[in-house]
Length: 255
Length: 322
Image (tube, rainbow over all chains, first blue to last red; front, side, top):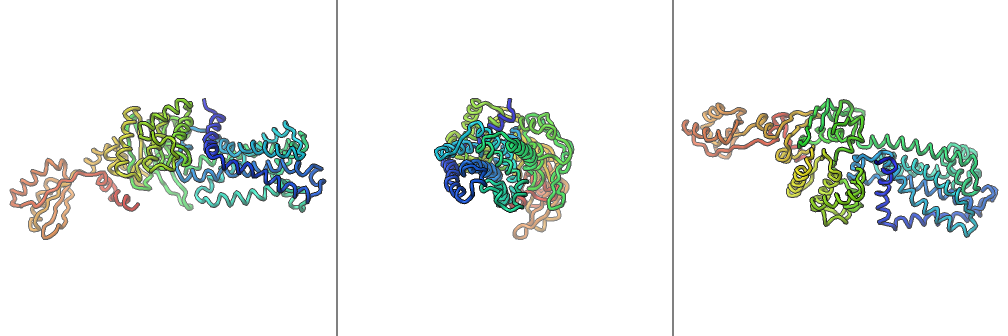
């Protein structure tokens, strides 16, 4: 019998079929965070005093942020991949099958999250010789939080894809104008404490901040503290709300 | 197999309510082949989308394959096949991969899905294209692949939305050959929409004529034509014989029309029943009245004549306007 998991697995498999047939597209996206880490990390270490990085090395502090960035960049494009399927008939055909609606959202988000595992392994493996301290259990839990959060972001992106399906240029406009403020105001790239008061206030209301803080607590400090718990709550909430809105949007997507 | 009760759908377009489907009652029995015929924008596709659960009705009820479309849309979807207007298979996928995936979406296991996909590719002449990417296929090949996708899980009820739009006559004939064969083999109930008159006329066992969101006629094509249109006899005579000819034709038929033909002759036409059998009688009477017919033509009606007599408009005008 089919259920949400088997349905999601099928949707995931269909998506992955194209990725595996054209692995070059993946190779570029996998190398990208490495470039980011290698070029931005040293600048960060040189321009920000160690105290602002919770006493961590720049690498230890920055790496979890890069993982969050990869997760967000990947899953927020889910909706864009739909646009072409809307134009042909394949979106409609998939929606006309008995597949569960939530599985359409989950399966597509998982496709964007799959490279994350590879990327995380790769950048960690490269960072370790440069002094990065890996705590395997904590890191794995950190990826799990990112996975749950990413499914939520993917579902929101899917909904955005549906909402903008009749004006395709709009998808990227909305995606870009949301993603960069969210990223910067989460303290992912630079410590938010060095910014003005209003930025710090804004960061406190940014759900992404909680994810970044949780990842840092896990990757850098190897602790299971309140920051991790808050991150878990935000990830689960994002996932739940994203799926509810996404399923509702799919029902309305064929008008 | 299908039963609807005042099925209705409204759309809100720029703050105005558009009534796309206005309370239609449809009954389709198992094994039937039914066509929804109507001009573009008549509500055919909207009706089909409600029956396939792609669109929730504004009001009214519909039971498809024994299941209510609103209460259990997933249950309906599992029991029907749907072939929409677009290309079903993803453009960047290989034809065979998408067929197998489609079977898996309907709960088939990998082995069965693969066997079924290969079998369908063989019977739809797609065998050689199994490894080809969908966007490299020709229009006719894509449409055959769509048909295969819709048949993967061997549904007992199949919906086709404008299956032959944009196809050349040869491909269309080919497509119908396949549909007919599938139907004989699997005893599938088929509901399709079309705006091609000939298609509805020659292929469907029953035609539902839809216009402005309502069903305005529902019968076999032959019965619709006999009841609503009838044969037409047109006799060309010299202008001077006009009066006597109209009297004779008026006695045998109705809806007299007189139109000018080249020179001084003109054509008198009338709607009659059993035109071919009546024509000799018409000619004998004209002969008896001393009139020499210059030409005699019997035309049998098309569904367009039916549509014309129902609505006062021609379906062909819409076809050309596209």
